[in-house]
Length: 317
Ligand SMILES: Cc1ncc(C[n+]2csc(CCOP(=O)(O)OP(=O)(O)O)c2C)c(N)n1
Ligand code: SF4
Ligand SMILES: [Mg+2]
Image 1 (cartoon, helix red, strand yellow):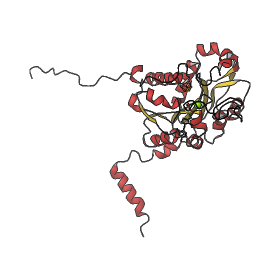
Image 2 (cartoon, rainbow, N blue to C red):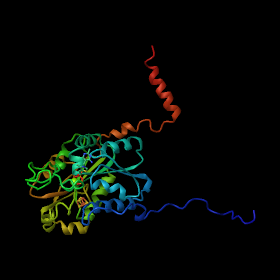
Image 3 (cartoon, helix red, strand yellow):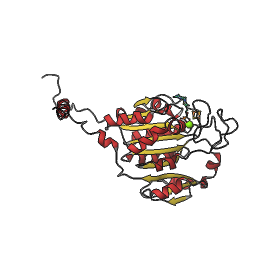
């Protein structure tokens, strides 16, 4: 027909994503807050992996750290304090095709959310869990959290925090069926990025504790560690967190640690003379509850009705 080009290619062009395709609202965290580093790592990872923005869902609880879903132009669920993990497990149960990231704080995960933390680790449903540990309740303005250092002033314990902190890494390692446990520090972006990437590639629940600076309420808390990189012990292994030269240049104190060795992981996690970073433990073969919940998801409506009918018929007398 006149005027219509017959050789037009009507196939849509492949989608290519740039960082801006994943960036949401402008972050409202304080300048220098470690949460920025985690957001940047997530933005880079989704861009590098070219994950369509609508294929990612970021789930959080309540806290400064839990504001992160607002800052990504993906799906997000900024939910209830301490409850991001059951929400994420629910998403995973019905939508195993999605890339699920949980962002939680030390209060959100290790105080009000403790029961969910334990059971989510055991259920081992595929997702990345980033626990941004600033050793304080930030959003509600400086109350002691379970990871607050002993003696630290806070508005709930103004005479100094009474008890010694819990160790979220050794707690997680002790939970039956833990399958990926890592630690990183917000002030080394290449290490944060590689840790988040390894967590993303893990076939199960990957728990990452990020030691995070809160310059507003705990200014200078990590200065001694930053000024003395020898106080950080990097766990290195071919099956661990890859390290580029910039990481090796900063952190010269390294130890060879096989992440399959759970006993050694426990020993490293409880060391008090150094701050270990890297991969403590990995078991890619750990059983996964989302394999169970995925059963039947591919059934048609008719198949489901027939299946339900057959199940009821078994009890007919
Ligand atoms: C059920 C419930 N209890 C208490 C609160 C108040 N609250 C909001 S955030 C928060 C603590 C946040 O600390 P953390 O999880 O460490 O996050 P951060 O702000 O340090 O990133 C508390 C106690 C709440 N919102 N809901
Ligand atoms: S109060 Fe602390 S944790 Fe919250 S945004 Fe500011 S620096 Fe970050
Ligand atoms: Mg906190």
